[in-house]
Length: 231
Image (cartoon, rainbow, N blue to C red):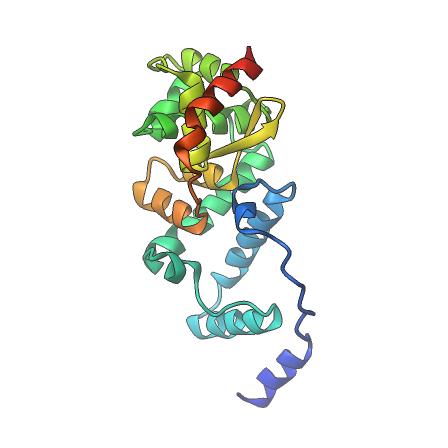
């Protein structure tokens, strides 16, 4: 490393290490500052994308040292190809920032669902939850809201809405309980839906936001209890 690089590194010192206080289940909980991370990602990408590869590498390693981060990339931890990660994350961060600022116009529910092309009932519920959250301003919603939007989108009816919503939460981690019978979209769910219909990018999103499925042994009881709460 030459003298100019030594000087640049001396301009900033590593930040003090902060003790980790989150639990494994915190990955499924949406953060009140969820867009701060996305804006930081978008800003960092915008700046670094104009640099040559060697400069980007120096900046990457210095930031890792300054922030005491692991040198391993998320893709290496989840088995997702690095090429897919690099292509999907900047686009995802940019689009979420546009939605947050109101720059992206909301499509009709039917058009939105046809664009996303969900393959399963749980994916469909995730898409409907995303629409309620970002295009209807409903951070918290009930199963009845999901059903009503599904009808508005002219989509096939749910055979058992309470059971299907419970599976979307427990097995897939796209939504999470918000209390009083309400649900809300998780970070995993929003990144997944935003990546659709690109299945490669959607798989990257799931890999970046893993979910540990809950035991299904109380599934029937949960669905029954949820239906009672929403009646």
